[in-house]
Amino acid sequence: MSRSRYATIGVALLLLVAGCGGAGSESATPETDAPTVDPSENATDDEATRLGNVEYPDGFSRAAVDVATARRLSVQYLRRESVSGVALERFRPGAYADYQYEANRTRARFRLDVHNGYADVTERDVYVASAVRHSRSGRNGQIAFEATNGSIKETRFRAADSMWAVVSRILTVGELRVVRVTGDADDRRIRYTITDVVVRNATDVRGHLTVDDDGVVRDARLQYTQGGEPKRFQYAVTSGTTVTPPAWLPAARVDSPEARRTAARPHATESEPRAPGRRTARGAAKRSVSPVPDDRPMAGPVRGDVPEVDDGPEYDLDFRANPARYRHTSDERGVFKIEPYKSELLPHWEVASLEGATEGADAIVERYRAYREVDDLVGMDLARKFLQMGWTRAMRYAKYPGGQKYERTDAGERVEREPETWYDPEKREIARVYRERLDRVREDPAYERAREQLAE
Image (cartoon, rainbow, N blue to C red):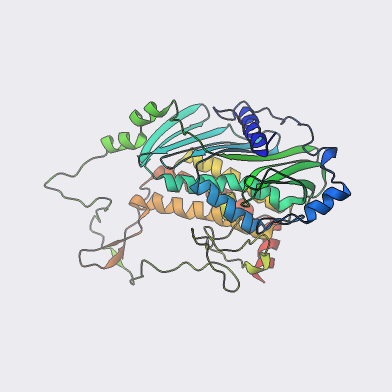
């Protein structure tokens, strides 16, 4: 049976686990599957010699994978090709994340179901076609729909980052060794087995990773037990898909909160013209500030010169493999540029709704704890930055219409708007959510030690 057939079967099995309608039926304790590495994967002397002579894709070898190269090739594939895939994470009993992704040139769909183990499951389903982004979200039994402007490219970028975060977790902690090469010259598959993990007190380690001839990760799986708790991470993608519109799409078109807000919003009369988003000063003069160029660059907190990748804002460097190149800063610089942490944290970050922000902030805290487990100091600091960005961004939207702190006068002068208390009360509550978790991280003695080491 060909490796592509195996990959197809793997996707089908993952879909059965994840469930096309969400992960709400996930039991508190994930099932324990049969070992993924069997005795046949222990290579003979002849097989070992043959594997030593294999021509591997750039960034891959018989006993190692360059994470930055694997990410670049696999994320490009997810962002550009017609593809379907699934991924799942089981952090501890009751805490999980499930991902389902389908995309081609004209449509994209991404589903994410998350449970942090303490609150009800949050489900989010996004479908984009014809420059319209339709979404369905559910939390605590309440369902909400939304239809807004959106792009397939943006959806694919975020979905690819979310999917890759699962593989990144596997590559970060797993120790790999090639055990098999199958297929012909046009469709090779290189199979790695995971021999161990760099996780304290981990037992019953099993897993594998499959790469195609282009260096694209096609499927990956890791499971182990730590402190009596099973942990499992899986990922599988295949080429070619027909993105089917979701059954809930008609409801999203007619039940859009944005449409209801627009209908209820008071409109300016002809006798009282008012610029969109401009707050009346009620006698208070706006404060003039020094002009600041709109295109000023945001320097990242790195040591030395690091180039950016060709197709995005990220630095072309794996900071997990090169932690000495990272420097702690007390602000939020680097959140969109430091990989692989941006890919692991950004999918959870949200300020659009209180429900989504609460779930996202909890997921970021969960990631922080995972980084702390393996002494990943850079990851700990980036998790703090994302929580801090949630607080500052939400506060800006809470005080200023559209989150715009500055505006320009008719003469072109850049001035600061007068803040309102509160222009958007929900954003104020979102800011509270992020601030509470931010303070919790800042007060963690482990974070204080990490901050001191990264600032040296």
